Amino acid sequence: MIGRLLMSRKGDAYAWFAAMLVFVFIPLASLSIDVTRMMYVRGHLQTANDAACQSAADALDTSLFIATNQKRIEPGLARSQAAREFSATLNDAGRIRYTIEGFSINFPAPTFAHCIATANVQHIIPMTPNMRVVIETTSEMRALTMP
Image (cartoon, rainbow, N blue to C red; front, side, top):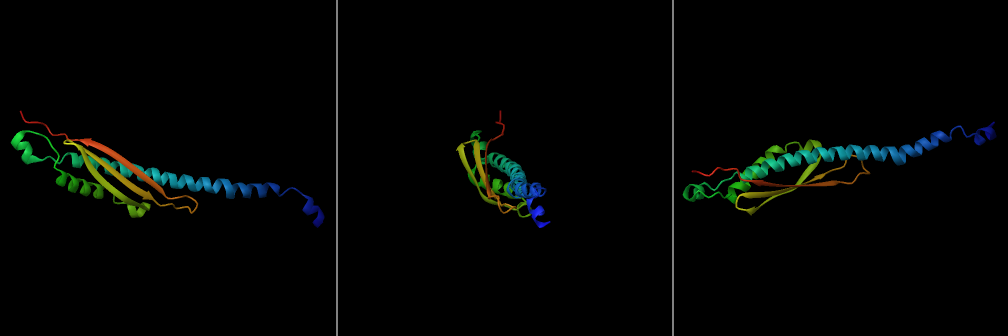
């Protein structure tokens, strides 16, 4: 009876299924969960970066504009407005398990603001590596000149 059980091949399908489950299906499931979270974070980071960059671009140097009718971004005001807008937009970082690595602004032209935001998305499933998201946005000032 034991010899016949050892020679039987009826349980081979279960062994193959277990091997496929461990080496194929579980890693694919973990990857799909963590990639979906990364796309969620990417969307929120893009929204926050866009809002912050437009806020920075709208920081008009009013004294120069009144005196000369020339449009120019005031860098100090732009940085403070952008930082406030960026942090107000991203309020779910702890719940979704991502960390903001950095947010920077530079001004390539007098009426343009260029913003870069980076975040690190922590993995949920142990086999998935941490993912880094980098977003860049450029915004132009939308002030009308006086006649």
